[in-house]
Amino acid sequence: DITALTAAHRSQLGIGRSYQRTNIFPQFTVLENVRLAAQSRRQQPWSLFTKAMEQKWALDKARACIEEAGLGKRVDWVSGVLSHGEQRQLEIAMVLATDARVLLLDEPLAGMGSEESGQMVELLRKLKQNRAILLVEHDMDAVFAVADTITVMVEGSVLESGPPEQIRNSE
Image (cartoon, rainbow, N blue to C red; front, top):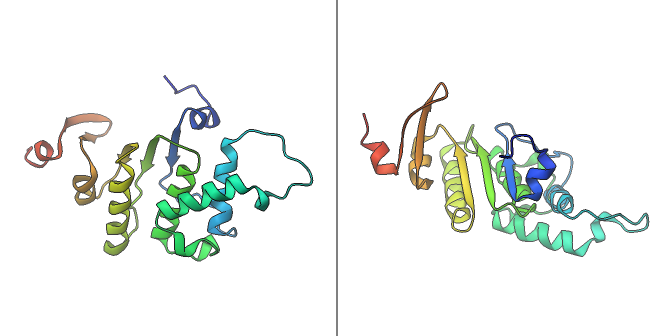
């Protein structure tokens, strides 16, 4: 039961979360956003004379996560100028930088056009190969494309749960 744990403690357990509303530092670059997330995982006293952008381990981790999230060509861009879909990818890169093994994603496709949605679906397919993902999403085409198990809820009550084909064929 993790309900009483702080967000920091949940993160230390390997649980990462992205929110329905984009939660980035828009004035920072893509690299700076993800580096900060990576640094949050390693608790250590900081030297007053060590610059954050000289922390090689954090920069290496950030670059790897940026690449995995599909933003390798945007690493030096200011985050606020990214498209909505790219900002969502950035959030996922930030979650990956915390070494999350379980991803809790709240409507990652909300507000996206079809091209960006398709890119996000491909990213989620790739990520689910070695991480557990709990996806809250209203785009049922995306859900059917990604999910192994689907639970349909209305007003907090479960209507049905099962594999995609079972849900697709359900009344």
